[in-house]
Amino acid sequence: MNEVPQKFHRQPYSFVRRGDRLTARRQNAWDTYSPTHVLEVPRELTDTSVAAGASFDQERVYGRRAPLVVEIGSGLGEAVVSAASQHPENDYLAVEVYTPGIADLLLKMGQAGVENVRCVQANAPEVLDHLLPEDGVDELWVFFPDPWHKKRHHKRRLVSPDFAAKAARVLKPGGLWRLATDWEEYALVMREVLEASADFENVFPGAGATEADPEGGWSPRWEGRILTSFERKAGEAGRRAHDLTYRRV
Image (cartoon, rainbow, N blue to C red):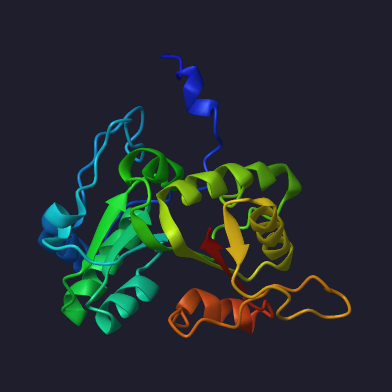
């Protein structure tokens, strides 16, 4: 058996790949749109990696220069396709590893007739490290990342001091990082990470403070984040979304 290179284990992945089998509708959307709307990137070790030296030429990819919004973990594409439809003046890049999710995004994109969305099937930290240019992103979204709620899995959580440094590298000064989670304990961790970072300031300092949580800093629900099926199910299960908004300083 071939030994897995040691550096493969240096950073735990924040995701688990699920089955990549596509329904007929998703397969048709993939065949139609992936050649033009899913970016080809150089790989290293795995099919979700991004090799050092990869490049992202926004003007070539979108055919113009416009504000760039990047969503990490786009899921089924509900949020990014809705935003792209409402704001054709922006460019949107969806980062996702799950093939059926990207296919569903492409299906929604085609149905909505939007042309300002592109996807990259890759591990998010490597996208921030190797693909996106420094100071090139106007907004970064991380909505409902896997909470990895078991303590032994906390090291897999996406939002960490190391990831915050990567986010700061690609965000323009003044750019916004919008986050949301329905897992309260993870929300507190997110806030702790961002408050400790010298690269970010809370857009809503002290907001939402209570006797039980005097620190506050929670954002009002951003109207640009549509209610997805995932968030709706979380609400039905009694889990409330917590929003945070930070600005790159």
